[in-house]
Image (cartoon, rainbow, N blue to C red; front, side):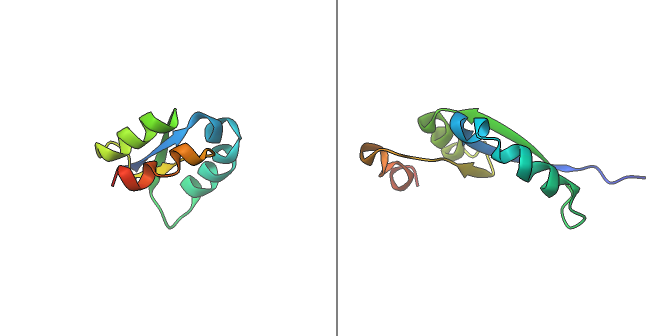
Length: 78
């Protein structure tokens, strides 16, 4: 019997998803014999990604913040 995979949820920005980074990383991660995980990416705007993570609905957040105005967001959501 095959062990059921657990799910790893990543909250990310749309620009990171659109960059193709996940297309490279996720298949390698999922195929790894060390981890028995499937990966789900929730690609949204930066603010929404941070809110999703703050609510505990994601295991990982990957966000690129380019403006100085937004540079305090990660600290503010902790």
